[in-house]
Image (cartoon, rainbow, N blue to C red; front, side, top):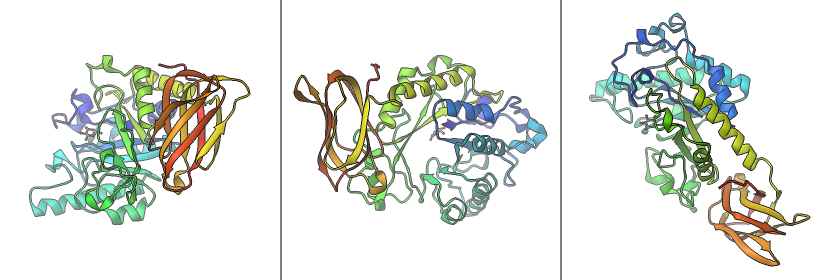
Amino acid sequence: MFIHFAPNTWQDKEGDDLSIKPKDLNPKKLDTDQWVAVAKSMGAKYIVFVAKHVGGFCWWQTETTDYSVKNTPWKGGQGDVMADLAKSCKKAGIALGVYLSPRDDYFKIVTGGKAKTPEAQADYEAKFRIQLTELLTKYGDIEEVWFDGSLVFGVKDILDKHAPNAVVFQGPEASIRWVGNEHGFAPDPAWNTVKFGAKKWGNFTAADGDPNGDRWLPNECDARIRNTWFWRTDNLETLKSVDDLMEMYELSVGRSSTLLLNNTPDPSGLIPEPDAKRSAEFGAEIKRRYKYPVIDTAGTGTELNMGPSSPVTIDAAMIQEDIRKGERIREYTVEGLVDGEWKVLSKGTAIGYKKIDRFPAVEVSQIRLIVSKSAANPIISKFAVFNTGAK
Ligand code: FUL
């Protein structure tokens, strides 16, 4: 789950126009346990918190800027949202990531972290390095770092030292990829590898996927639960339906990518009730559809067979490769034995961590996966079929 929260939450805007002073920001009810409970309820495994968005306001106690939580009346200026959130995540067993914007309007720094003069550049780089170090050293393990819009200077030494296992979004140290849209879907195929040499600043998208690539760079699909990243007074009716969210899930997670779905606290500091409720409904529907397979198996080789004791109705298949050994499958079909005849239920190319295929409900007495092309012997950690009953 993504969490966007910034002074523009008070401005009905997607970006901070710097019109509100920190002394006027007081999210009195802010409760990171509530945020984490929302994440849990939708089945999220990690949270990426926007600790600093493009406007430059910092939600943690930083020595680098006055445009930060220490100058708000919230908790008498002693509050630290990162500290609260780290505590809540730890309690709940959820991983924590941070979004630290390279662009910083307060310091007149544009996308990528670029300043107007060499002096201003040196000054900002020094500040940014302190900000990153603070975030990576004061709040326990940080497992993902977002450099939105890419980062045009190096911070490898800091990442290596303080967060060697964190996945990195954009910048020269990128280890994951922006999928290329903000609608929560990956294309099919969405290959996990790219030819890395081509893009120095790590700004790859799913379009760069190449099954013969040399760098594992999985896609992350960031998307919004309403039609904006930040809370607004005027868009409750854009809250996505469970069906919309399930479509996102099937087209992102079901295409070997991760879904990073945004929730956004309102000026009181809480994720609004309708959004929290919808998130929980979404989590419940994922479980209802995909927790209990009709039948499943696992194995290696180019054909996997499953025979239920009596015919079953199914409308979805899930295939997972053991990606520790790479993404080996290049082409496959899922087939069902219907009235004594094998019928193709779905076919495709890339699988990777998890592929979900939907097809019209059909009664089958046997199911098989046929891998017709692969780069090496397929290792399938799961092949399962479901009867979701959903459209
Ligand atoms: C974009 C930004 O412009 C949005 O405000 C948001 O943070 C989104 C995740 O990325 O680049």
